[in-house]
Length: 193
Picture 1 (cartoon, one colour):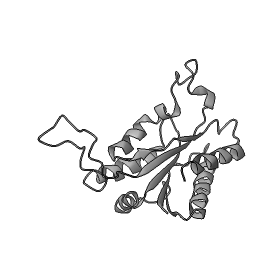
Picture 2 (cartoon, rainbow, N blue to C red):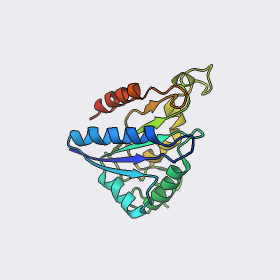
Picture 3 (cartoon, one colour):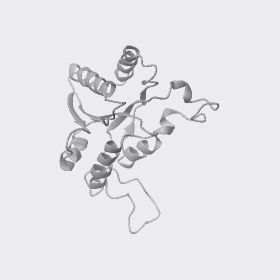
Picture 4 (tube, rainbow, N blue to C red):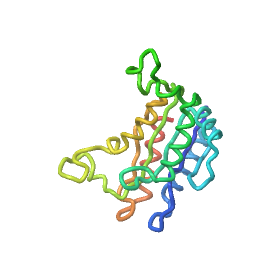
């Protein structure tokens, strides 16, 4: 069995208390534990210990990033987590600097990652309806959810992690269908574990 790290990137807002993200995290934890995987969960509500988080990433075979999308990106507390933990990881825990060397200062940028063989997945919740994506006539100009998550994908490519297909719960503030989302989430995770 494998080691699974689940990071709950939710940040409390009066209009978004985090119940859906917490439900998805708990649902994933139960699914993984039922299959015999070891699970660790980190929440942005906790005080972050950078060394422990670096160890969590080295320990994990798979990282599930659960986060709401807020202003077209992850929450500020999740971004702070990444800024602090991943910057510290550049000293050798997660990667060797930016991958370049003094001998080849123009080559191999982003190729110093030390997490080869590890996989990750994004699971996000959005106010936007699914129909706003992959349609040139709608808000995102034909872009996909992964286009929106492109900077996040590059973070984990930097560490040489491999992506699994992303999952999204759409329209969660105006037309939520939690039962259908949980059914889709279960089916999505089950494809890979």
